[in-house]
Image (tube, rainbow, N blue to C red; front, top):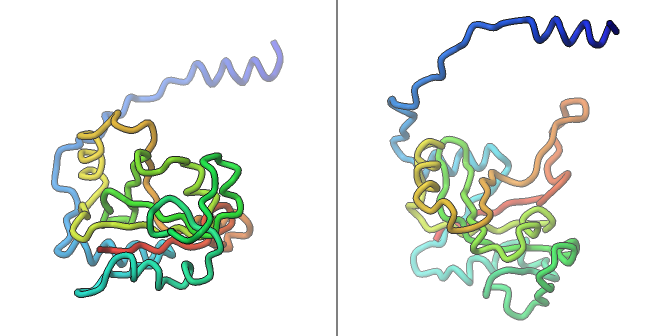
Length: 193
């Protein structure tokens, strides 16, 4: 018997005590002000929140964002009128400066937003763009991931794709140094309207 086979046999012979799964029933984290907790959590994840004020229009607020003023190409919503719309092919998004996308709801405990694939013709666009602008209706924030999954469950199967996003891309793999935008969007701006 080889040393590899001997090691695998010893591992297979080990028996661990079964551990019961925790109950999913109970009091999960609730926030006195879920919207404010969401804003703080998104900021902690290197995202930015902008609110459409009274009397302002969503289109004007989005057009006034710094990332929009410097954008050459943006995509995915009517707010990009006047800019070149790339074809709906994933590789075409490598040069896109800004992608604007609607989120269905946010999660207060971690600052994540749920983006359903039905509003994203090319899902790779979320990860290939330089800057991501996410539109979220005010009040569409749940307290925790348990509520988030309950909400997703109601529409499960309606879209072939969906994902949670919390801030721009981040990694700390190399020497535990945080790098924002290393392998995805360099910034995420959430616009509450």
